[in-house]
Image (cartoon, rainbow, N blue to C red; front, side, top):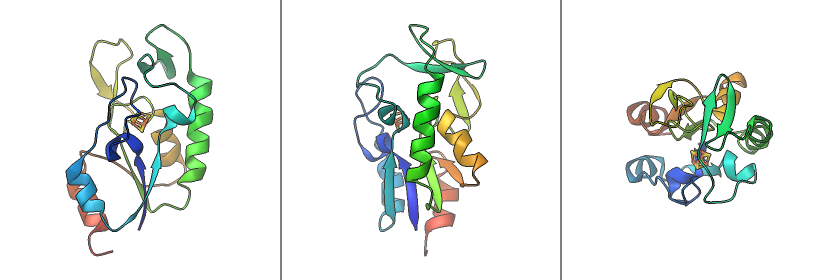
Length: 146
Ligand code: SF4
């Protein structure tokens, strides 16, 4: 299968604070499949590190209150082109770009709420199945033996 994946989950140090979120269990399950790495925030041209971003009232703001919605929406569209032929995507939970079930609540206080990141929303709108790193069992069912 061809699978789109948040670059930070594979070990790329592309997060806002210069770290990664490598997930060995996930990578083990996905071994043998073709992985297409995407990072909407890198595609948007953010440097690493950069100030954290969160969604508030449907828009994306940096912790310095910069409105980066347009920049991130454009990047999400570019990333969608990159994963257009993928069977599914696995994205990093809680990110304002990649969050699947949860995102931070826009107050930069570490609180999560239900919601989708900008890129996730676009994938769903385009009929691409989306999972997070917390959906291990579902991902196993979808990918094992294929
Ligand atoms: S935008 Fe997505 S891929 Fe990039 S660092 Fe954030 S969660 Fe990871």
